Length: 571
Image (tube, rainbow, N blue to C red; front, side):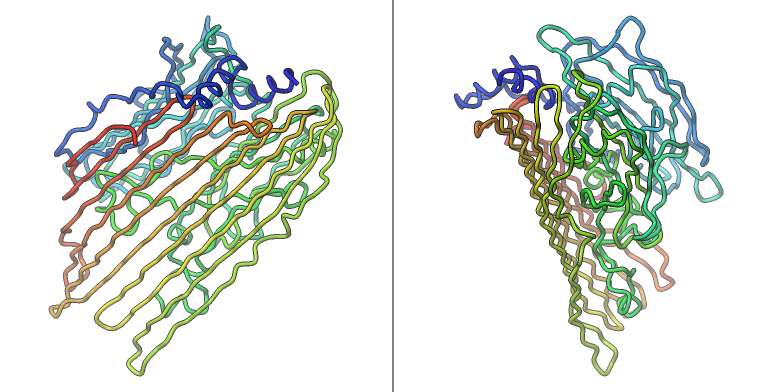
C-alpha cells in the first residue's frame, strides 16, 4: 500500500512527505501559504507595450544552473535557426524543476503576427505567436514553460531549432530578436526531484517543427519501436489553425458559405488521436486568436488568451501501455476533423517505465471512442425579396467514451480507466443587408474527464474539467458617404479544474481561469482603406489556485491601446 502510494505521488510530480503534508493541510482547511506574486514593475501605465496578466511559472527559491540556448537571435527570414543544447556542467540531473525562459523584442515598423516554435531533439519545448509592432512601438514580451516532465530529453546533448519565420520586404519591416535559456533547479532533501517520464519522443522526428494537416483524412503519423516495460503513456498535443482555418470558429456549412461571406466546413474542429489506426483519444482545439486576428487593435496592448504561449493538451494513453509494450512497431497519429487546408500539429509522447522489469504485458479491455465525431448541423436562414439574409446556423457535437486497459508489472496488475465527456456548441446569427453585416458567435467546448487507476488496494481518481467559451460580435454598418465602421467585441476564456483523490481522500486541487475581453471600432473610408480606430478597450483577468502553490490573480485593463490599470491580489 505504502509503495503504491509513493509511486502514485511521484507520478503526480511530488515526493511522499511533501505531498502528504499538503494533503494534511488541505484536510485541516489551512492550505499552503499563498504563492508570492511576481513583480509588476514591467507594467507601465500609459504604455502601449504588450502586457499579459499570466503569471510566470513558479520558480524555486534556490539559485538555478542556467544554460543559454540562444541570445539576441535575429528572425528576419524563414530559415530555421539551429543551436546546440547541452546539460548544465557540474549540475547533473535529475532536477527539482526545469523552466524554459524566453524574452523577445521587435523593432518598430510594420509586421504580421508570426508563429514561433522552439525544439530540442525535435521535441517541441515552446509554441506561440508574436505581437504586431507599429511605426512608433517595438513590443517586448516574455514567455516561460515548465519542462520538468521533459527531464529525460534534457539529460544529454541535443541539436535544437528555433523556427520563427518572418518576412522583411517593402511594407514589412519589423525584425524580431529572441533570447532563450533553460533554468535547472538542483534537487535537494526538501525539494526532491519528481518522477518524470523515462522517454520523451517527438511526433515527428524531423526538422521544421509542426506539420501541416490539410484535411480530415491526412493526419500526422509517426511509427515508433518503444520500450517493452511501459506503465503510463501520455501525449502532449498542439493544433494551431492557420490560413483557411485561422478563424474556424466563424466558419459555416459549405452550402451557405458564399452567401454568408464566410469560410466552410462548419465551425467544428477536433483533434483525433489513434494508435495503429485504432481511435485512442480526443484533444479539443482551443480557439487561439493571433494579434492580427479580426481587428489588430483589439489585441494591443493585451493579446488574447495564450496567444504568445500556447498550452498543450495532454491526452492520457495509459490504457494502451500493455499494447505499446509488446515489442512491435506502433504508429501514433494526430488528425484534425474538418480541417480545411491548414492546421499545424505536433505532439510529444511521454512514457513512464516499470524499472523493476524489462517486460510488462497487458491489453486494452474497453474502447468506446468510436470512429469519430458525428456533429449535428442546423441551418435556419431566411432570404427576403431584397436579398437580405437573417437567421442562424449551428453545429454541435457530443462524445462520451471510455477507454480501459491493464498492465501486469513487477509490482502487480495495474488497471487504468479513462472516461471522457466532450461537448462542443457553436451558434451563429446573421443579419446581412446592403447597409449592414452582423455576425454574432456563441461557442463553447467542455471536457469532463475522469481517470481511475487501481494498483493493488490503492484506487486513485483524477478528475479534470476544461471549458473554452468564446463570444464574437461583429457589426459592419455602411455610412451614407460609403465609409464603413467595423465594430467588434470578443470574450475569450480558458478554464481548467483538477481534483486528485486517493481512496476517496482529496490530495490535490487546482483551478485556472483566464479571460480576455476586448472591443474596438475600425474606421474605413469609401475606398475601404483603414483611416483609424476608436473606442478601443480591453481587459484580462487571470486567477489560479492549487494546494501546492496557493493563489494568484491579476487584472489588466486598457483603453485606446495603452495600459490603464494593473490590480494584483488573490481571489
